[in-house]
Length: 333
Ligand code: SF4
Image (tube, rainbow, N blue to C red; front, side, top):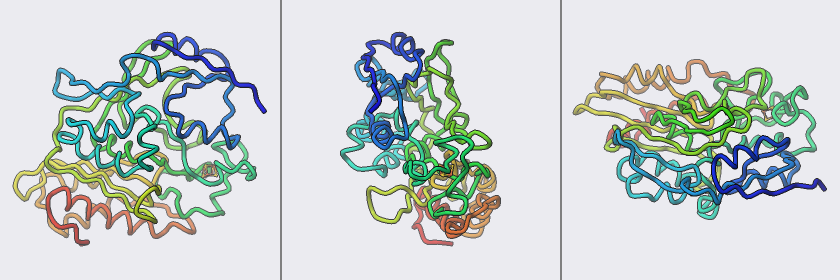
C-alpha cells in the first residue's frame, strides 16, 4: 500500500502552492479520482483537498450578461440552478444526462472537466498495453474491444473517448475555463481545453502542471430558446454515451441564423461539427439540408472493427437533436 499525505487548502494560492510538491493532485468531489486510485491507475503521493476554498462553490452573473459557475459547484446544483435552467437549458440537460443522482450530488464542475476516459483497458491494470496509463506500452483497444471508442480525431496511440456529457454542452456554448497556477491566472477557450491524443494520449488537457480550475464562464445566452442535448446510450440511465449531440440554434422563423453542434462519445475531446454548423447557417431547416450537414460532420470518420455503427448513429443523432432544438419533431431524415 502506498502512503498518501493529505492537505486541506483554504485558498487558491495555498492550493497552488501545495500542488508544487512532487506527486500532488487536487481532489474535489473525488468521484473519478478515488476510483482511479482504488484500481491502481492513479497513484498520487499527496492529495490537496480544495473543497474548503471559499468562493469556488457559487454561481454568479458576469457583467456581459454571461454566467460564472465556480469549479466546486456540484453537478446537480449547476443543473438545477434557476439561471442555468432558464438561460442555458442545454447545459442543464447535459448535466442531468450524466452519471447517477448520487454522483451528480458529489461531482464538481471542475472535476467533471477532468474525468478520464472510461476505456476498459485503461482502468484494468491487468492489461499491460495502454499508452494513456503507461506511455509507450501500446494500445490494446486498437485490435481489441473498441465498440465504445473514437471514430474522429484518434491516433494510432489511443482511440479513447472523453466521457463527459457536461463538456459537450460547454463546447457548443463556447465556454471559457478559468484557471490559476504558478504563473498566475489565465482563461482557456473551451475548444482548446481538452486535447486530441496525438503522440501524448496520457495528457488529456492543456492545463499546465499545478494549475487549478477555478470556474467556467458561460458567454451571454444566445441559444436559450432553441437547444437540445441528445444522448444515445445502451440503457436509459447511468451509462456513458455511444453518441451524444449538443445542438444550439439561433432561428429566424424557419431559417437557421447560426448553429452550434458538438458531439460526445466520438472523440478524445468534445467534437465541434464546424462544417455542419456552416452548412446550416442561413439555410431553411429542411430534411435535405440537415442530412447533408450531418454527413459533413462525419466525413472524416475512421471507425474501428466494432464501432462502425457510430457513423450513422451520429448522423441520425445530429438530425434529431437539431430538429428538436428548432422545435420540430425529431424524426430521422
Ligand atoms: Fe489506453 Fe487509449 Fe488504447 Fe484505451 S484507447 S487502451 S485508453 S491507449
